[in-house]
Image (cartoon, rainbow, N blue to C red):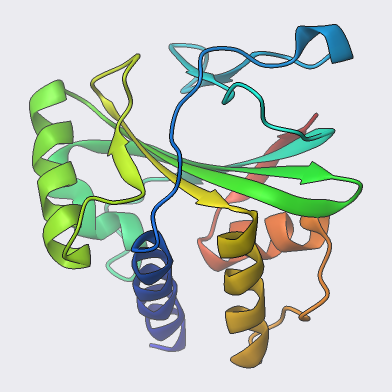
Length: 187
């Protein structure tokens, strides 16, 4: 029950922060700085392009698996939409979180559109998230630095295991733990 409350609070906070809106997608990363320009997802079958011009020096990739037997899982709410996986990418610069991209992957473009519509209805807006331009089976929610800092402060205020001055690595691990996910790489 306690986990379910945290998951509901997290979803509500995530959707509330989305209401402020932000810039969405780019086409390539900063190869000159030795950074990758894309992230391989879903066992290499999907690719997410890192937003162009994003100033970061590392990112943390969290994978959240679908568990149809866990009624308290956030993703169980989206099983009717063919949800396959959720990923959170937390970008950091000098240890501080500067952006987070939440990526939802569905099995078909039709299910993705239906999930997008459901999320828009829950949030009351479509600001801050969209169906990914490069792949119609992916929805991406982008949170800018101010929004990520706001989430850190809100979670810290709830006293659920995160300090207000948390660095990006600590926040990414907290985020993974909160959604029963796990960090699969940091780059």
